[in-house]
Amino acid sequence: MTDQLRFYVIVFFASILPTFRLDPSSDSPLRLSPSEFILYRIMLQQILRPKGKGNKKAQDAAKAALKGSNSHKKVKARFSTSFHRPKTLITSRAPKYPRRSIPHQPRLDEHKIIVHPLNTESAMKKMEENNTLVFIVDIKSNKAQIKLALKKLYDIDCVKINTLIRPDGTKKAYARLTPDVDALDIAANKLSLV
Image 1 (cartoon, rainbow, N blue to C red):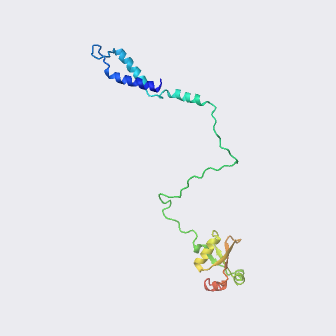
Image 2: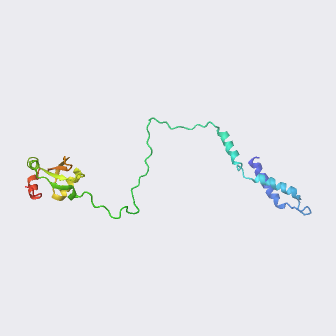
Image 3: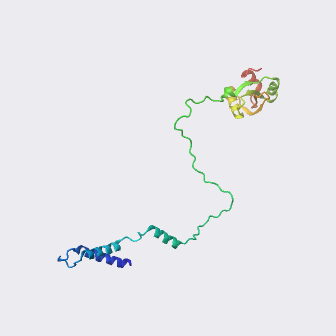
């Protein structure tokens, strides 16, 4: 049934439906028996039923038949064998409560890093010839930490730090001083070695 014909049928039934009378002895121009009334009502319901509301299985089957079983999906062209997963969001830590009730003391402060200065013959020779001070330092300390500790403790600026681990297991640091400072003066005044 076309949409236009469907519209006319709906208008016709809508106009005559209020005039239906179940009682044949009524004065109405249209006299319908109860069976005729039920028949007309069923016809009207069939016409007014919304389109497209069929069995879902049947609709899916019809769609599949229309589409066909050999569907072609476009595949992205790849030109290398390696690939990377996308970078996901990494949020900074925001702990809800402290994991330790009391924070640990600094494991390596300047007093722990510098154990003591050396005043052996070879160390004194380094002071005189190379403008270098020699210290025994903590085994876990690195060159940057040693340089910072010397600056804090003795206000010494170093050009560079060389380190080695002695056979007895301690770490020795050679602190090369800047040319404007004399290592012997520092050793005498600040370290009390000479």
